[in-house]
Amino acid sequence: MLRRPVNNDWSGQRFPHPTKRRPIIGELGASDPRNPILSVLQWGARLGPIFELQVFRQKFVFVASAELTAELCDETRFCKALPPAITALRQYAGDGLFTAFNDEPNWQLAHELLMPAFTKAAMRSYHSTMTATACELFDYWDRRAVGAADAGATTDSGATTDSDVTQDMTKLTMETLTRTAFSRDFGSFTSPEQHPFVAAMIRALETGRRKGGLGTAPGGRFLTRYLDHRNAEHQAYIDSLLDKVIAERADDHRQDDLLGIMLNVAHPETGEKLSMLNIRYQILTFLVAGHETTSGALSFTLYYLSQNPECLARARAEADDILGDDPTAMPTFEQVPKFRYIRRCLDEALRIWPTVPAFARSPRADTEIAGRYRMRPQDWAVIMLGLVHRDPEVWDRPDVYDPDRFLAENVKKRPAHSYKPFGAGLRACIGRQFALHEAVLVLAGLLHRYELAADPSYQLAVDERLTMVPKDFHLSLTKRTIPATAGIG
Image 1: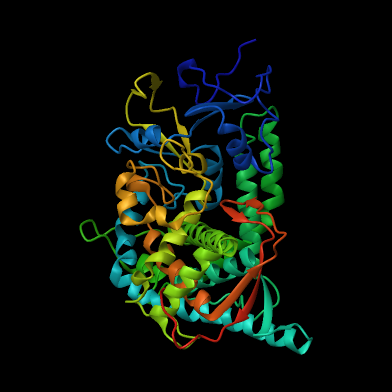
Image 2 (image 1 turned 90 degrees about the vertical axis):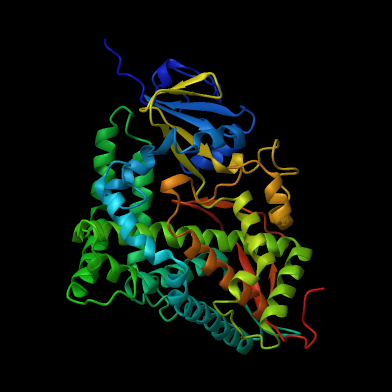
């Protein structure tokens, strides 16, 4: 019987792998199918800088060192690759910026048209929406605190509310994106129920992730059809809602949000514009990738601050020093870059738990990496950021939370490409500045307004969605009274 070749076979080269490889199934069972990334992080740390996992006919090659990452991030030799889980998402996000192949014309067109939407001037235009949305979240917490106070839940300093951090940060980042992307309010802070679009989107993402692991399994084609059938209603709802939003704006020539830019701006040289279908893909890409990543970054940062009182005190002192005595004050656009310590707190949380846990790279032509491993353009390697960001060759005490790793003088000492939470090269995250501006703004305003405390018995658990987020992490939030002498000590 003729055996079908292994996908991503690397010319038959073998690398360390986690368990004994068995006929047909390979290392099926080495990773928890519900938490595959966490599994790789757990056993990958002991396998060296490059290792593999084979499941049925699909081979995954992983990179765990900063040195190999630097080589793979050389844009003259390597480019973005789409591993199976991302390829599966193309059914939902098509040739959007995140899921497009490198040679697809819509990627280049969309990238060039949308770059002006993420300039400093554009960030200034989004700032008021970001601020207003954050204030709605804070008001939402304050209303709940009043309700809790009426029920007798108070502290010496005032009413306290409980926040399911990941859930609340997801509401915040989703609202920020829907309002800046296509001027639509999803009612996250006024309705007791989650907007059905969010539930449908999460279901579609989960379906795509599961399909990515089934492609080479015996009977995998039938299993993926079954998953598509289960998800069909959710996907139809997503598509119809976004198509309706686009159609409502088709004759509107304003360009004050992402949808307006995509509908009305043509390429300055060719005159090309994005198709209505591709605009839907782009909006879905921004909603999915944008809100999940920022939500996780905020949630992990708040977790680590709650566990490190000295870091929390320094971050709060910085917020008080810049924002003054009014606890409800929010950062102006010009103030956001001044929160340097808070930015370092965010960077360090993204080092330990990069919310986008990995990205894949392929060579542009036949080559070698590390001077010994052959790679062809059809081969790809997954850069595991959770391991690269903890590479002991680069990071001293890598599991310790220390925001001062990101002081300028310390950053200069580290090798290039040892910290890559937003990807690499031409296909790096186009919305990086948007996410960082929003996250710093929210953290500064939140720390200035509230005392926060976590359950001392809580042990960090991480949930895998498209991105990584803390699971079941709650904070108690109490409104503050700012001392008149507030400032950085």
